[in-house]
Amino acid sequence: MSADKKLFIKTFGCQMNVYDSERMVTALGQDGYSEVSSPEEADMILLNTCHIREKAAEKIYSDLGRFKPLKAKNPDLKIGVAGCVAQAEGGEIMRRQPMVDMVVGPQSYHRLPDMARSVEQGKKPIETDFPEEDKFEHLPRGPKMKRAPAAFLTVQEGCDKFCAFCVVPYTRGAESSRPVAQIIAEARDLVERGVRDITLLGQNVNAYHGTGENGDQTLPQLIDALAEIEDLHRIRFTTSHPNDMDDALINAHRDQPKLMPYLHLPVQAGSDKVLKAMNRKHTAQSYIEIIDRLRAARPDIALSGDFIVGFPGETDADFEQTLDLVRRVKYAQAYSFKYSTRPGTPAADRKTQVPEDVKSERLKRLQDLLSEQQREFMHSMVGRTLPVLLERPGRLEGQLVGRSEYLHGVHLQVDQQKIGQVVNVKIVAADTNSLKGELA
Ligand code: 5AD
Ligand code: SF4
Image (cartoon, rainbow, N blue to C red; front, side):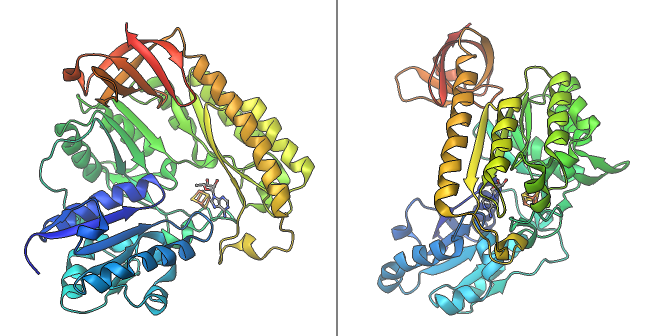
């Protein structure tokens, strides 16, 4: 193959996959691959897959089927499957879809250039072990290209919580944290390229415990260290488990001005019986106490959450308790899902599955309530002056789109040169998902 090879990468699922895809593009970039935006142009197609939604593997197989004509046209086209479906399915992918040339799990992305080379030699490598060496240490950061003002940075991976519905502990493996110095170096690099708002990523990020100069460091310690980077204005983290929300992290929301007043803290359900069956290891009351402490520390904090309705054994009365909890907490934003089985997880085989129509009805009621709360939150912004990080040109002439501390998109007329700056914006109108404002 020629030196200027073309890579098409399709990313599914969470922000961590977005981050991983960027790193894969950089790693393969050193081997002469450049990214293209359509599969038709590609010498290599990579699917970076997600296993969290229902029938994830089936969807990947049908996606792969769509690439068949491309492979018929160009027999040199190579196809790789990465991400959590790759981890879960392994070699099975090649048995069911022989046109796949390589399978690589999330812990092995640093091996991708070697794997791509062996694919070019006609081999079919599979890497789904959890290797000893640190993939982040071995993944290149790439040329100093300018970046958009907001970026993700993975600091922690994997999860030891084993919620009964969730595949993450199996696909991403045990909890592990990157060393502080490695994260600071990556953050400095991002800031030099123009990044001003960093979201620290991890499946259970508030359990972060990375090696630092004085032994293991916690998430609030890492946040304080990052806050010393002068031109980094905003720090966020996602996603968290309630049991790892300790006092130090709650107080960081009061004491660290660069930590944004926004927290995604999934609760999943409001009934203690269901929470126990989910193996969440917290109660509705202990969750509410955390929220109260957070609000005492940072009264303007906006909350987001994840919910599952129709978990096996959930009764109408249990579901009402989820609604009660939502009314009590008041969310600025939230994600909600019908429970669906994931093979290999403890809840999958339970006999007390909830009928589909009951799940649908509960989901609708929950989403109506959450949408109402979201609308209220958006409208409460009108008339306020908010600091907004200007991110990119808008659709209208002279318009920029920025983001508020609460992650709302904010549209305003402002000098295009100001991208990357934080400006004060008076909010004049609220839509379902975005705000309109003018320079204050
Ligand atoms: N069914 C429905 N929702 C799920 N989630 C994870 N696993 C399942 C499942 N089996 C949801 C949880 C989690 C979010 C990322 O996805 O709410 O917090
Ligand atoms: Fe999955 Fe989150 Fe539970 Fe870990 S804490 S098992 S990632 S739902």
